[in-house]
Length: 307
Ligand SMILES: Cc1cc2nc3c(=O)[nH]c(=O)nc-3n(C[C@H](O)[C@H](O)[C@H](O)COP(=O)(O)OP(=O)(O)OC[C@H]3O[C@@H](n4cnc5c(N)ncnc54)[C@H](O)[C@@H]3O)c2cc1C
Image 1 (cartoon, rainbow, N blue to C red):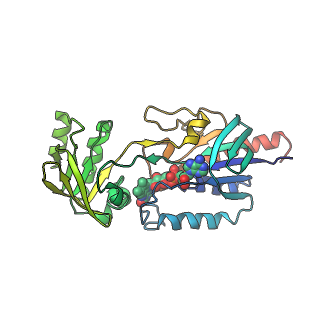
Image 2 (image 1 turned 180 degrees about the vertical axis):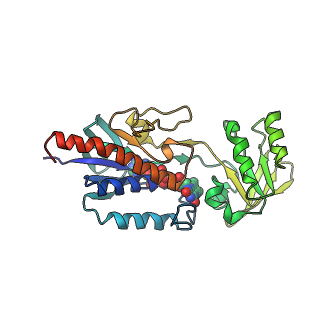
Image 3 (image 1 turned 90 degrees about the vertical axis):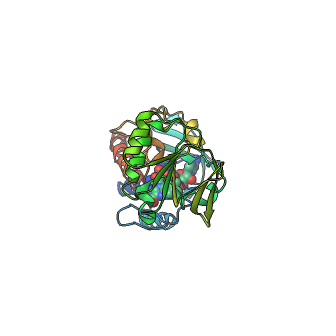
């Protein structure tokens, strides 16, 4: 007879590992599948996670896996989940190596960042092209910083850029000739002594991943030791195949109380649900989803006489 596991967690980043810990400790039969690149793969250290400030991301994952080994009811698999079918209480999950039956699914698959189409960006990504000042701002404080504007981010530009002034006096917004900044935006930036450069960018000059200058097509250069950029993100394929509803920004919609998606029995936690992306936030969301689904799963077990 095929075993039906209680919960499948897809994704072994902070969200998935945290959900696995909570459900493991709640005595549920859990399978966590992880395969593919992790979002912060390029970063040498993870910051702003209390007790883990400065830990290399891979070491963080290894420690979590080591601690999960104490729970024999949690199994960790290096496996890519390719499809999910069925419904609450009876999902069939397709892996490369076969299928699994599970009662609940938690999507913790993160987001994929589109690579920036600028010379020098690949080398500097995750080292000095960064997304979050709380994660890597301290290490680069008091140096010239830039913000790369792009269409679609205008609504978030002002508060994001103004906060950067807390780390450094020298902030430049590069529009790269792709975004028109309105007068209110310009006034707000000016009031905080933030410079705006509209000329198209020719390349990012970097050495061993450390940015030095932004070179403009007119030949001018602007010193820049950290460039903040939020390139478009997309969901991994299995999220689309699961049929869960997305919001207007492409994040998975979840009930704020239960973290259940639009598909009953499928929950989601971590970067794939929000623009507020950070390891500790993802871990908290993983715990939240786990605790919510554990209540109904426990009642289900009681109702069928399994507990
Ligand atoms: C360069 C960079 C540096 C960062 N630095 C920091 C920092 O210092 N501090 C901080 O708090 N945050 C940092 N972040 C943000 C942080 O990495 C994310 O918020 C966090 O990793 C999100 O966790 P998650 O569990 O939601 O997703 P992820 O960590 O992205 O994990 C998702 C996992 O799911 C796997 N997966 C996807 N699809 C499948 C599938 N079909 N089957 C099986 N597995 C699958 C992926 O391979 C991945 O391992 C950084 C981000 C970047 C890009």
